[in-house]
Amino acid sequence: MPSPFPGMDPYLEHLALWPDVHHELISGIREQLNRLIRPGYVARVEERTYLPEADVEDIREARVEIIDANTRNIVTVIEVISPSNKIPVSAG
Image (cartoon, rainbow, N blue to C red; front, side, top):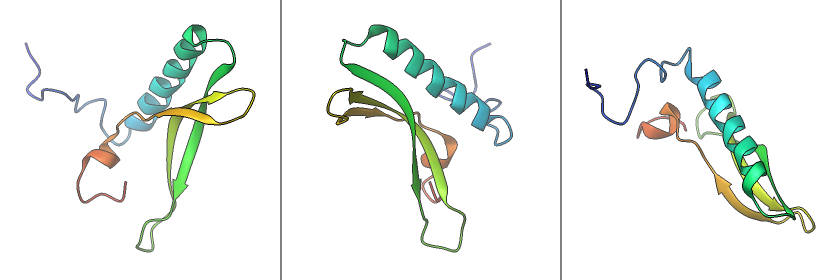
């Protein structure tokens, strides 16, 4: 039976399950990229932290950064979308 929710999985995106799924996706992306990217570059998991406007806890979002290993310059950033940054009124 096809999913009644095209483009999403409401079970994996449940707030109790999603953080672990998100972490594993990002770790898997980093692992695969490090096998494939050219020498002199490295993929690593980094975290962006920012403060929302209201009195809410800091928001932390993990992502994959590809950097030039010699200069430490960021070449690109890969973010895995999550429920917090899909909802228009969310703090994410």
